[in-house]
Length: 226
Image 1: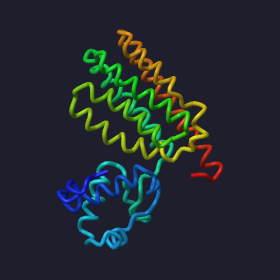
Image 2 (image 1 turned 90 degrees about the vertical axis):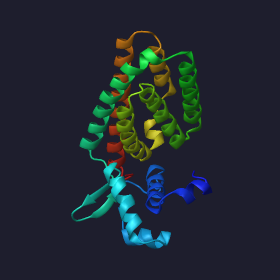
Image 3 (image 1 turned 30 degrees about the vertical axis):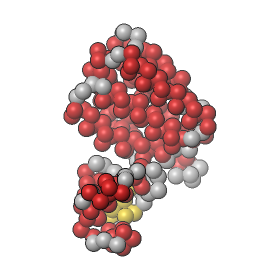
């Protein structure tokens, strides 16, 4: 949440960008929802120019899609999109982790363990949106520890799409396969000192999660939930 002083310093198009992006990431705007510049500008009592610029930036991040017939919509996901996200995550995170492992220390381990503790808590309470954000915080931290600035930037763009995707999944359908236990196992491998085992476990972790995401999306579509 931006403070009043931060809001006052933002250019108008950046403020619109933040409002739209947060609405997309928290699920207020859902995949496939249509965006109309005129309606947005009227609701925010501003001209269409900053709205158009904000939409342009979100389009570059892959959160908004321009269709020749349907107009402008929030990103929706085909099976091909989901498979691309899974395989890209696998390669990006594996590379990031290979760079991060030599840099980790005991304080890092405590930090990751604190994230996992939160994951267990949110999982038990079925606070799925909080759980998803904490899950991505764990994986983002693996990337950021690499110190590779361009890799971190690429991950941040992908992270937004992953968050939108995970927010449309029904928790109860995913819960049986989503567990803090898998992150605990991953953390154990990462700090085992065996890089090969850690990378193998990470790849399996991402693939397994991806398979369950696909299953939930397909089942949701078949039951009319999506």
